[in-house]
Length: 189
Image (cartoon, rainbow, N blue to C red):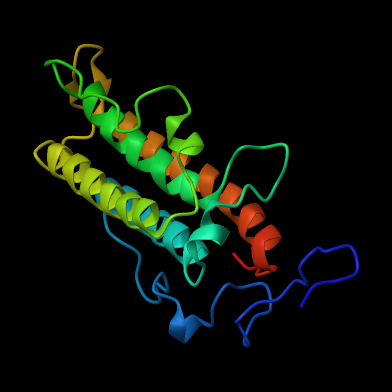
């Protein structure tokens, strides 16, 4: 499935729309029907869909493929993105607390990317950390349904934090598009 210059051939699993990642009936993000009512529900829906998109971009790859830094000279990998997003989910909780900050998951700066090595235990730990940190941040924010409420030492508005979370996932889903295409040629939004 490789061309002469060792770049993977572009492909998609979608058969209905060739620019999609999956067919509409197989896409867990498929939100046919009425969109959510209200600002909070809308923001949470976007966050949920970007989180699902990131997971979808990583599905079906082995540890080596997930850890591959496929867009040199960037140090990013799909596994690094998973670890990075776990780290930032934790850090966002530091933004909304008045207490001592939680320690970094991966220690030193860029530890999230540098430690993203092709080892199944590292991959499993990254997925576990992401799920745990997402749930903890979601739980921390669940008690603050007023989007204008200001939290933490810096008084960040809940709305700003939610929008920032969406922006972070959306940006990294774009990175994941390029990383995945370079790993095995799979494309689609």
